[in-house]
Image (spheres, rainbow, N blue to C red):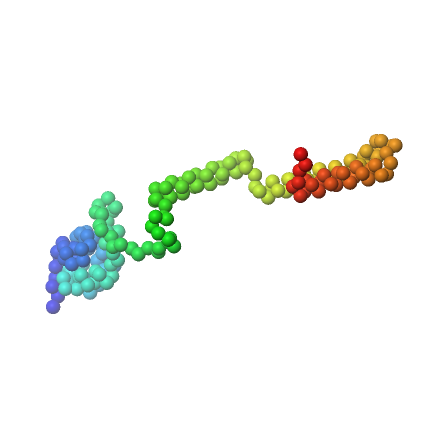
Length: 188
């Protein structure tokens, strides 16, 4: 036989049996348009009458741990003790190896600020893309190499009394210098 009770008594029953905060307004919203809509525990919609025997079991079966409070505005909610959630453990040798939360947070905020600054400078044209810089340097090196290798033939044209062996010597010296630069070997 059904045990009809009103919404106030139902909310008190839920709070007493489950330990979850529940108000009359919460219960009415849950029954009208929430998880308990169409539930067999609802005996009458207006004014709300619920079956006290079925109410708690239906509430536990259909309403999530935080759903009842989610129906209220945040300002009206009272803080509730949440069940501890199981978190994935980080692979750490000992708890001393974990950095302090505030230090980790500060480091994270610092890195975010650095990324935002880099993004801003890129948009302002103060920073260049790596590919663009590499391409420009490659072009500059090729032009320099070509001009240096052309020094011997230019010297032969401007100084007509140079002999072929002297021009070849100049070319050899320039090639050796370029090879040293390419290998990273600099003579002081």
